[in-house]
Image 1 (cartoon, one colour):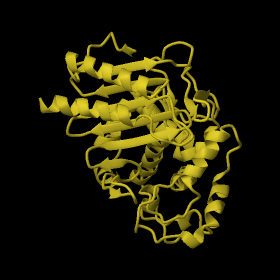
Image 2: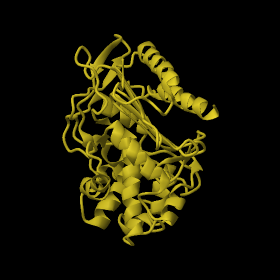
Image 3: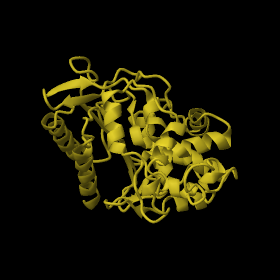
Length: 353
């Protein structure tokens, strides 16, 4: 275990920080997490930082600043790209999908806003099955957007009217990525780099085009039949696409989620609309335009073979919390959840004192 020795934690206080260190170390041990890294920041206080485990099983310790795959946190970047184009007058969230994809079934009924909020009604292939396929064949060729949309075409008899129910579906964001490219005239990756990553100086954040993860951190999945870990680090990012291809670090995400949730990236009216969440079907999660909006916090969770990430800003605490776990199994069960809960409980305890 390695808690940050250079920066004393003012976020929780010395005694509470040591107690949380012990709790997180035990969670990592009990749940067989190859590595765990956490950062909590509150302005005016030294951050709480915690790292335990190995960057590679049998090798060197994990370091705080090593980048990792952020999976569905990518959606927050894609939605921000769309809304930046809105702020610049290049498109409107009320524009119909038929503006760019006129042949897609029901495209005249579906708006950009519906896609952003996961309320398009599009009956896409099952995300869980797609996730297992990526887990099993992480270096397979990636289907293009046209192929992904054609697969959805075959399910059009299951289409629901837009804005009636929220269903979390990656295809919504694959399509939004295509819209950004058509409106901006740039590849999605370049638009995100030039308009979000570089202006915010997110030096360890990327929309990669290669299968290797820089920095030396490895992600793992547990083989249930043997109890052994298998290395799931290498991945064709095209398989995740606009719904989940990006990589980042704890420090970058801590600064980004604060800007994302406090409105530093968009005009006030655009941000206010973004933050109006509606419940996703079968959950209590409120989803706005590309991010979870309440009731307690704002941010996103991401999971992809080998990596599980939580990125949240809690406005009443003025706290940004990033949790990274280097394990995700084929069943897609969130491995970071007990870590996030322990950190959140510690923060709430601090606030009540």
